Length: 267
Image (tube, rainbow, N blue to C red; front, top):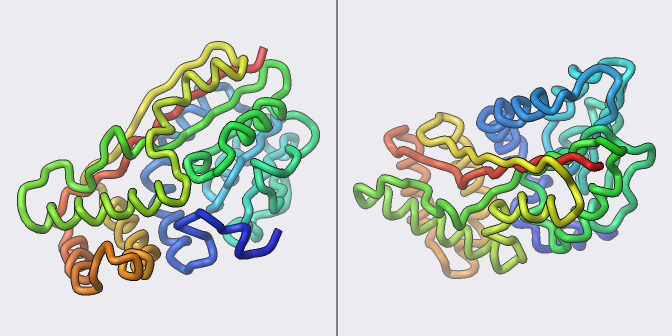
């Protein structure tokens, strides 16, 4: 796959330096939720896990702690530049496109993807491949955003700073939708897992408000998409600079889109 094709349609690609900042912020915001579910699913010593679209290193490392040297964690992504240096021991890192490449061999006790499928063009095929990779009794844990459920960056739109933030967030969502992102995908996960034949399907949702990591995430995201916003006439450089300055004050109560976590078991 050519490098340009690899990132076609993906607005926040891993090649930009801001990606590492975003991964750290996402880890701070969402790792406690992810690992609460992982632990409740009973992922423990000796198990095999496939981390799909790993992006940053925090989830593969956390899974490796749980499965130990006798277990295995395969971390895959279309760009492994942020995870390559964690390979070794229980962790194997592979460049892989979940929608087009065969699943890693061997079968898995856990397959997990966080904030991945919303950006995958052929989500249905990616889901089928993840389900097929499960061992009998294996668990699939999908966690994805649903910007349509809570579209505002500042739910308390109390002044011009908040209105600007929410307008830029709306512009960001428009860019995502134009590139094939499903902004209502998260809410569909429980139904999709049942339709895929999984049992004991459950789900919950989480979104933080007024975390310092929300501000870090917003600033890094805005810097990544700045050129596209300006080029497509959605915002000016002055508006983006003003928004970044507002974020830096720490006085905006910033939120994320809800992250829906859904899980089920292969019979």
